[in-house]
Image (cartoon, rainbow, N blue to C red):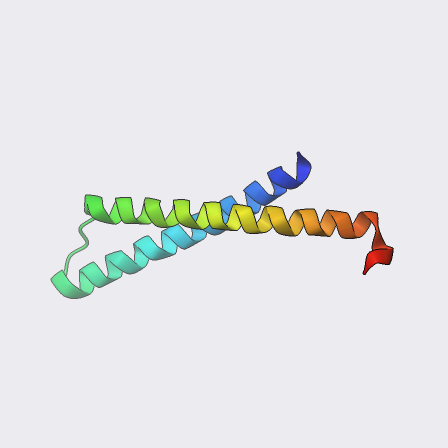
Length: 79
């Protein structure tokens, strides 16, 4: 259970940072095109979708890395 919580926390942080950066980039492009900051619904949905995709991908990756790290610590002679 502990590796899953660690993987979830790291994946959540990564997803939030990337979703905020994507949303910021979309707003900057909107400002460059129109000259105003308009937080439209599609931008929020796109940021949420980006965050979810990155969360699930990072969770899967971090869980895999945590499991490999845990098995390497249990049997160091297999390296």
